[in-house]
Length: 188
Length: 188
Image (cartoon, rainbow over the protein chains, first blue to last red):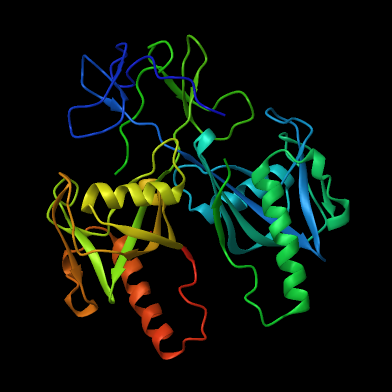
């Protein structure tokens, strides 16, 4: 979702004005007319995992807006102080209470319309014992034919799942192929 | 670099307090005691390219702080409304005025100490005509043995260059190897 506009300077509280700064910038920023602070707003990273056991994928039913009661891979905003992989593992713990072993980065999907970049890592689910947190109604494993495609919360999740199952089939039929190549693309 | 702390609410200008919000969050945020706005701060993406012609790599000598007069790959902060690849291409144009053809994503380097994720794309430099912008003192091509390793501005750049030259040699000696695999890692 898009963020609400900045109204006040974070440094001194004065009402900001939107203009192109004088420092050679080319974009309008919220600039403080009192103390000169320039407020930059940039895309955020959403990081998550594809936890898999015996070919089944762990999905979480969301207990929060947006898309409450829709299904998602465990994912959330990357926090300061974390690597992308650490953030993805943390979200998997927070949302599903799942024990995992992190594997490689798999999809990197820019979503410029909402100012986000989504990064999903493959992961091995180590136990069927799950302990969903407050943001999750229910967490469970789905075989490919069980995936509730019409009830997936975000397109980055459904695209990641489709690629994952296609790569799994390619891998099964031709084990010499590069397994799970990293996929970088964007969704409009 | 780390950002200065938020002092005032972006919505109403009131002095914020740092505390863990009541919504199940686990981290301290700048919370407005008047209007309740929670201010999240998250890692930023830096996006750039490795522009290559005849085995030589384009580097830019920085005309801005930090690391003024050190050499870097063309890169900068991803902006709202862009995909990661679009941002990397824009920075290459702004900093070097270089004509390029974008190739694949190559390195994704988390730098949690400064709250950044750096993404570098391989690119084909199409012309030796360069037109550096105001942020660049000089832009020019370097063969591997000419790289000023002690004068590189950022570790993400030197690590990306080292991997790139190593993969180029592997590719030259074994053309059947996977060319330029995507590299995801972190720097402390």
